[in-house]
Image (cartoon, rainbow, N blue to C red; front, side, top):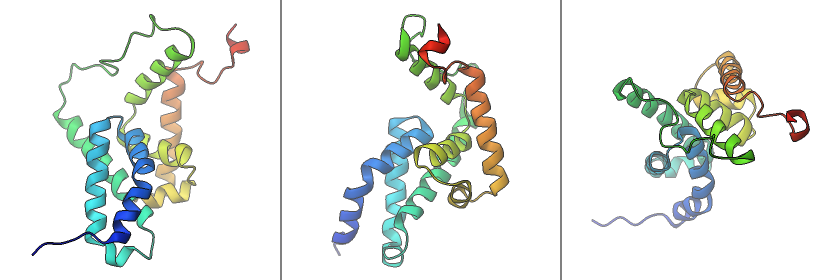
Length: 171
């Protein structure tokens, strides 16, 4: 028996896949993992499409993305070798100048964050979600979102202290 995709589901996926892929990438920092996470989220949505099509399919997909990203991070974290340093494979910032150097510093700083910290920052600052919405999506308490945001921003400020300074401030 051959199954065909619901045209409404196909339209939904086409309309939202790029934005959701960008969010997945920002959460996990790995393009291939982001694609896998999004594909799994769409599969889970497809299985529940009849029930979710008229509700909030975006919320369902985002919740799956963020929770699966945290789970994938935990799994990788247990399996990783201890000696690897964050930022491996990125260009040396000493060779780069100006904004490019800052971007590299920021990318390295982001690699030091946990998956939950990245997920909270993406929800709060990339997707412009409230703390309450982020807590609901991640299935954690409001206090966890607040403390995770505080810790993540503190870690970023520690690693890239002049990131928010203007050119005038730096000279």
